[in-house]
Length: 97
Image (cartoon, rainbow, N blue to C red; front, side, top):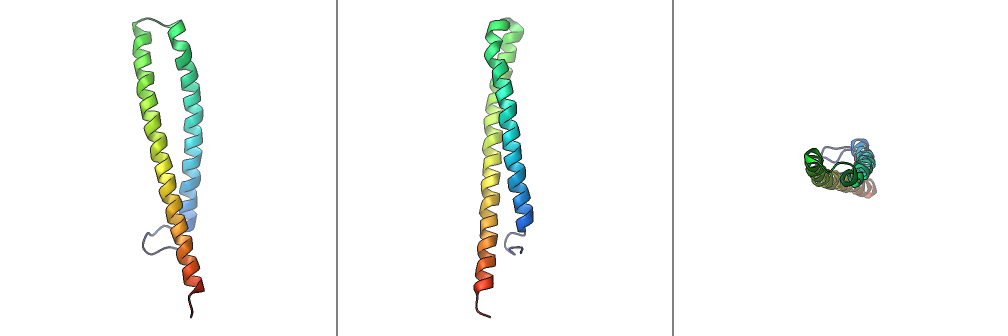
């Protein structure tokens, strides 16, 4: 049932929740790979290009944190809306007719 206040049905919200969970998992896997390369960087490339690459890895780390945070917020909002929809459905179905 669609909550008329929000316009998102349960199926759409579940899809958003699943997609954000998948995205978070994929980002964490990618970040693990990037961080393992970053750990090896100082020992294999101490040149100007290595310094630039280290700066880019720092940018990655900041962007990664922001992306994860925003995906988690989106997931939380979708979860909240899903719960709200289900609460409305429960209240509506248990209301006297």
